[in-house]
Amino acid sequence: MTRWIIPVVIALTTAIGLGDAAHAVPPPPPNPSDAEIDAGRQQADAKAARVGELTGRLTDAEARLRELTDDVAFKLELANKARVDLDTARTEADRARREADAARVEAEAAGRAVEDARVRLDEFAAASYEQGSVVGSVSAYFGATSPEDLLARAQLLQAVSESSLNALDDVERSRAEQANKDSAARAALDLADRKQSAADQAKRDADAAQTAAVQAQQGQAAAARGIQDEKTRVEGELDQALHAVEGLEGQRDRYDQWLADKRREDEEAARRAALAAAAPAPQAPRPPRPVTAPVSGSVETVVARAMGQLGVRYSWGGGNYDGPTVGIRDGGIGDAHGDYYSVGFDCSGLMMYAFAGAGVYLPHYSGYQYNAGRKVPLSQAQRGDMLFWGPGGGTHVALYLGGGMMVEAPYSGSHVRVAPVRYGGIMPYATRVL
Image 1 (cartoon, rainbow, N blue to C red):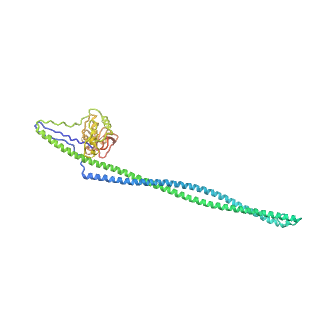
Image 2: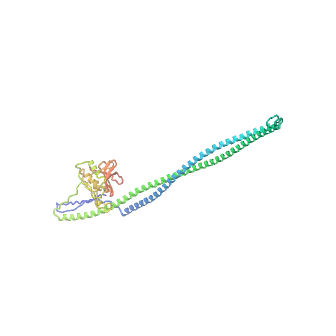
C-alpha cells in the first residue's frame, strides 16, 4: 500500500583518510507465511461457496414467494365470489320466506272461507226442512195454487241449493290452490335455506383458505428476508476475507520487494564503500529531502489540498509533493489494477502532496511519516493529524478531518475518498506535524 524508499546514506570519516560506508533502511514489512495466505484463500473460497448456496436458496425462496403471492390473489378472488354468492343466497332466502309467509296466510284464509261456506250450506239444508219455511223445506210445495206454481217453487229450491254447492266447490278449489302455493313456497324456502347454508359454508371455507394463503405468503416472505439477510452478512464476510487475502498477498509482495531493494541497497553500499576507501577525498551523497518545519500555510491548507484530490484513482507508489504521478510495479494487486501505468496517489503519496502545501516535506513511506511529528493519543486527534495502521504505522496512513471522518487513498482499484475512521488495527497514536 505504501511505497518503499530505501535511502542510502554514506558516512565518511576523512580525518584519518579512511572511509566506512553505512546505510539506513526501513524495518522489514510483515511477511505472512504460505500457510496464512492459503488459510485466507480457503476461507474466502468457503465464503464464496456459501454466497453461491444462499443465492440459489434465495432464488428458490423468491420463486416460491411469487407462487404464494399469486395464490393469495386467487384465494382473495374466491373469497369475493363466496361473499357475492352468500349475498345472493340470502336475498333469495328472504324472498322465499316472504312468499312462503304470504302463501301460508292465503291458505289459512282459504281454509276459513271453506269452513264459512260449509256452515252456510248446513244452515240452508237445515232451513230447508224447517216447518213453515217458504224456501228451503218440503212445506214450500204445499199451498201451491197450480202445477205451474209448484214447478216454479221446485226450480227455486234447486237453484238456491246448486248456488250454495257451486260456491262451496269454488271455495274448495281456491283452498286447494292456496294449499298448493303454500306447499311450493315452503319447498322453495327449504331450497333457499339450503343454498344459504351452503353459501355460508363456502364463505367460511374461502375465508379460511384466504387466511391460510396469507399466512403462508407472510411466512415465505419472512424466510426470504432471512435468507437475504444471511446472504448479505456472508457477502460482507466474503468481502472481508477477500480484503484479508489481498492484504496478506500485498504484504508478501511488499516484503519480497523489500528484500530485493535491500539486496540492491547492500550491493550499492558495498560498492560505494569500496570507492570511498579507494578515494582520497570522497564526497558524501546528497541525503534525501528531510522533514522540515512548516514555513507557510496551515491545517486547512493541508486539508484543502487533500480534499482537492477526491476521486483521483489509487496508484501504488504514486504521488509526490507536486501532485499525482504514475505508480510503480508491486508484483501483485497493484499490477493487476494497472497502477504502474496509471496516474494517482497511494496513501503516503497523498500525505506528501497535502503537507507540502504547508511547507512540510514528508518521505514517501507511511512508517517514516508516523515518526515525522509529535505523537498524540488517538482520543485527542485533531483535524489535520495523520492516522496510521499496522506495525510502526507501515501499513496505511490517512488524514483526520474531525468528527470521526478521514480522507485517504485506500487501496488498488479505489480512489481518494472521505470515509469514517476504521479503528480495526489502527495505531493508538496520531501524528501531529502542524
